[in-house]
Image (tube, rainbow over all chains, first blue to last red; front, side, top):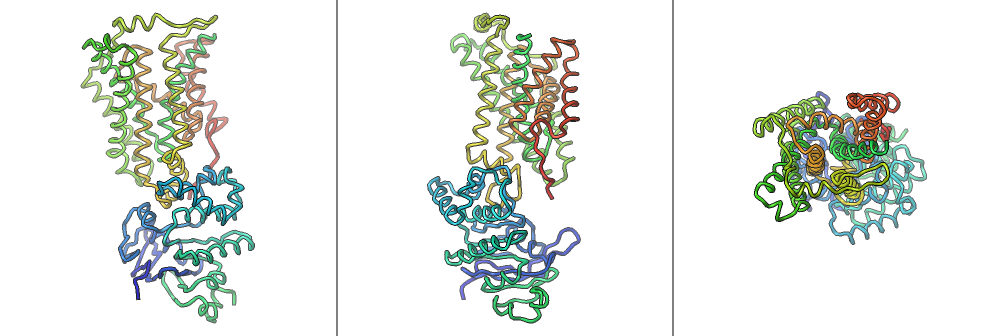
Length: 238
Length: 306
């Protein structure tokens, strides 16, 4: 078996006295879509932040492509090939759509490559092309989510960290976003997806982990967890 | 009246250029860099010392005044840019993440150190622009008159340089990759990191650019008064800070607008009321604007960051 693209080994993290993650071990293989599900406050967002090094793990190790990235500055982590689409989307509200995308490609020096990727982003999300000169803050929630994902894809990451892409969006838009994520698999992008909408996440994911109060409680193929009575009870509304 | 407004415009342009440094640093770090006025003073000294050196060695006679002025401005920008870079590293970066009070106190400390350093090394008497030189006499006797308005060459130079600097900075921030990264960093520092921006380098660049701008304003100010003094940065820095707050601190066009407005209001007050209350008009204007618009003229209402 080849080494996984991403590996968390017994990672713990805390905010002051509050323990956010306890001994979390997980792996994401190349080309996989892995979902991380769990209730509010279970530590899903914290897990992503310890990967992108926004939050420093207090114990354990984070390996990307077989090398430890623990303690690396977040911008170096991004340069290594991990793009993080954080919770709440965090669009640069006073930059235009186009400028937001340019910032996504900040590390790409070749203007022709940036232009080509921007065209590709507009092909996936035609709405963004219509809005390219508008500032990010004037977009609807769904458009902002599209922009957040498109911005991350500008770097053609090896691994995409997606935090709650469906949060607060209309069902139709959620479907569209999930279609795009499913499409990433065909393009060979590996995805670690954090979702409250467990049903959609488990349907999409190859494998999934269930996080509860900072600890991994279950792991398995998405379809298997979807059929598990305990999981259905706790996360899928019976 | 028109003459007074023109004089106010000249002074306002200088305030505006210095205000840019305050507003850029605040926009990114939420730090009021109280040492910024001192950078302007340092720039003025670097410029005047260079001019005096050129005049003393006879180089001014052979090179001509415009070339010497360019040299002095470049020298002062270089000194101030190095200073801005080093101070950010030494006095502010170690305090990042230490709350907002510590860097503020550090800034006041830097300001005191710098003033005293210049006072001890250059003396507490003003140093003078070598105005007795023939090149100056020739340059200053020119000027243009149009109706009630007469424009001195120095004033015209100040306005031209300040407008160029403001336009240049605006283009840099709006059009270039680094400029856009600065705006992105000021809007969301964590997200800027997540797209791969080296935020520390952006902050360094902000200090270097702001300091170089202040240095030019310092040299131009000393051309206006024909001298530089170790404590000149305090009041001018304060005024420029007022200009930045007037326009909405963190907002670049706001700083330009605030500076010009401040210069004009001061001039109007001097003309219509009493000249010795000049500073009262400046700070009074600040009070009035802040009561009506707490975020300044162009300040935006942004949601509090969590």
